[in-house]
Length: 352
Image (cartoon, rainbow, N blue to C red):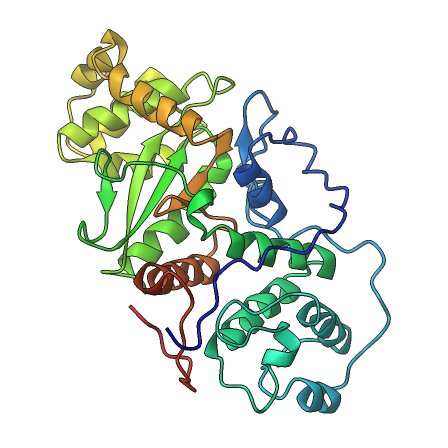
């Protein structure tokens, strides 16, 4: 196949920087979860003290301790990287972009550093997509050294060896059930970060990626959240009554009030028998489903919530609309060609 290159050139060996997650979370053991934290995605982990919902809101990636004072003018940027759209970046951020582009490799047909693939005589469309991804990270304040790690880890995750076997047909699904991309999310109803992730996930599969992606919700109640398991059982009860997503939304919106009386009230709000729901939740009748999801997540090395897989590939970008859409679009391209193939196309059209 012309103008193709295997996805993973392999990140060049470099010392891993000292990275410490926020104090509210323990250091995570899973590579997938660690990478998610590095990408600016906060997570709830086993035994870690949990933030409030306000503290859990998305924040820019780790701030750069000693920013460089070197700057690159708009004119020089257009001369050196003529195909890159660096509008909105400061002179310092443009200089950082140039450093990053000279360090990472393109993953489509150009077969060179991103900087060289952004030259005027190149037509590799994927270089423009990589440039946009890096630009968004810089706009959020991410340090260049971290961006290089995140970009390389993201592209490496497409390889078959990085994917986990997670089912997407044994769970409540939002969106077109025939959509080719399955977002499988392991979440906990008492995890504030899961509550923050809910809206962008829902909006993505029902909005810009409608028909292309679907969301599969899996239960992963953490030991440190005493009401998460019974809330999961209530959600499973609602699923069997055709009311899962209605109750799911209410549980996340009221995750600090999940006592029995509150759960019964939420059930009534969606037209369910709250007393019957709690009776079945405490009877153990619904536990097998929760245990199946927990065991599947543990086998996939899930140690924190939310953890998201895109057709089995760990989602290593923030759970924000831009990054979710990018991950879905890249997945469609990868599933179609097993590579990022742009055979001389000169526009940023989407495939799939």
